[in-house]
Length: 637
Image (cartoon, rainbow, N blue to C red):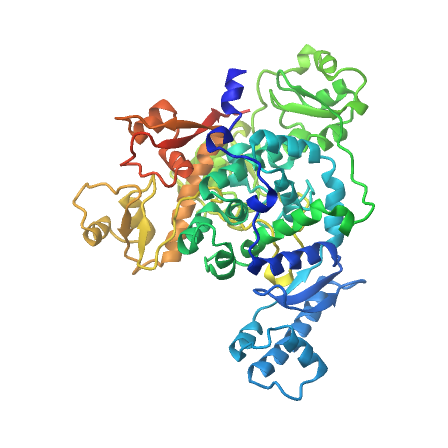
C-alpha cells in the first residue's frame, strides 16, 4: 500500500485542486464567438450539412451547405467550391470599395462584418472561406456512448486530481467512439498516437492499449496532468494535447502564458493551423453541451456502464483456451478486450501474462477467478510465442521494426531479400529471425553486409493506423482543409524546442553533438566550431544556443532530421519503459542533476529535462523542487 501511495500520484506535489470550471477553463470575450460557433456545429447542423465560414472570425458564417441525399464526396466538394468562388467574387467586389447599389446577397454578406470593415479585411477574407461539416448527429451518438465509461472516467480523474470536466474532450477527439482511427495515426477514445501512447501504455503487435477505453483514460489523465505541469494552465495544456508541448511553449514565450486570445488569433507556428487554434474553444463548446444535454438533446437516454468481472492472468494463454474456460466466444472476448491485437486474436501470439481480462458478469456463470483456476495446466504457457512475421503499417521503418523485435536492420534485410533501396511498404509481411531464412535466396551483391541505421518506408511519414483498422473521421470532415483531430507531430509530449530560430540558432538538447548537427546540415564539424568560437573537443552545452550554417540544408529540413533523431531515441526507450507516475525531489547542496537522474532515479537526462523544462541543468540551486518520472521496465511478452 505504501508504494501505491507513493504513486497516487502525480498531483500531490503539483498541488492540483479541482476548482470551478470557469477558473480552470477561462474564455476571454474575444473567443466567445468561437465557442458559440462550435456549439452550433455540435448541436444545430447534422453531418449531411455544413457551413461556409471565415476561418479566423468564426462568427462570420456565410451560408449553410446541404449535403443530404446521395451526394458523393466529389459532388459535395464541387458544390462547396462553386459556392466558395461565388462568395469570393462578392467579397472581392466589396473590397474594391463598391458599397452602393448592392444586391440583397451582397448586402447580407457585408452585414456579417462590422460597419467599419476595411477593404483590406474583406480582400483577405476572400481567401479564408472554409467549409465545416455539421456534427450534431455524431455528437448525440457520442453522448449516448459516453454513458458506458463516464463513471469510470470521472473516478479516475478525481484520483489523478485533474478536473472531471475534461471528460468532454473525447467528444472533440473521437465522439466517444473507441473504434475511431485518424489518418494521422491516432487511435481509440482519446486518439493517442503511437509515439505518445507508448509513454503510458503498451502499444505493440501484441497489445494496443490505446484502443482500451479504460487503460487509455488513465493514460489521458496522466498526459493532461503532465501538460498542465509544464504549461501551468488548462487552455494551453489542452491545446498541447492536440498540437504538442514544444509549439505551445513557443507560443507562450511569444505572447505570454495566459494570452489565450492572442495565441489563438495570431500565433503563426508552422503547424499551428485551424485545428490547433480551435482545439481549446471546441473543447469548451463540447463541455458546455455535455453539461447542458437536456437543453440541446431533450430526453436523451445514455447507455449504462457494463458491470465487468476483471482478472489478471497468471501466465500466457491462447485466446481460444481463455474464451473456452470463461464460457464465452472468442469474438465476445475480443469485443470486451479491444487492446488485444490481431496477432492474439489469430492465435499467432498468446494473451500475455498479467493482462487484465474484462468480461461482463452477465456472460459468466460463476466467479471469473474460479473460471481462470479451471484452465487446464497444459493450456498455460510460461512464455510468449516467438515472432515469425511483422506486417508493415504506415509509419514503420526498418530500424524501428528491428528495435521492436530486438534484432538488426541488416538481419531483416537478409531474411527478406530486400534490394539495394531497402524500401518497405504498408501491408508487407517481413520475416523475423524466429521464422528462419527466406526459402529463396538472392545473390549476395543484392544484400549488403551493413544496412542503413534508419530506412524510411514508401509510406506516409507519420504514425499511421493499421491498414485493416476501421477509419473513423474525427471532428467531422472538412474537405480540403482537413479535420479537427489530433495534429500529427512526431513528439507531441516533448516540450523541447527543436526549431531553428530566425537568426539560425538552436537550443542544444540532450543526446545531441556537433557531429549530429554537421551531418544534418551537410557540413564539417569544424565549420560549426569556427562559427561558434568553440575550441577543439569542447562539448556543446545543453540549454545553450548554437549558431548554424544553413547554406546547404534549410532550417525546415534540419528540424525534420533533428525531430526524427529524437523520435527514434524516445520510441526505442518507451518500447522498454512506461511512465507510471511522478515523484518530487528537492535538490540538496552538492547534488548534480546528471548524477541524480542517471544514478539515483535511473532516468535519462533528456526525459528528466522534459519534466523540468525550466531547470538549468548546469546551475540548479539547493532547495529547487524537481519532478522525476517513475519508470517501470516492460517485459518483452
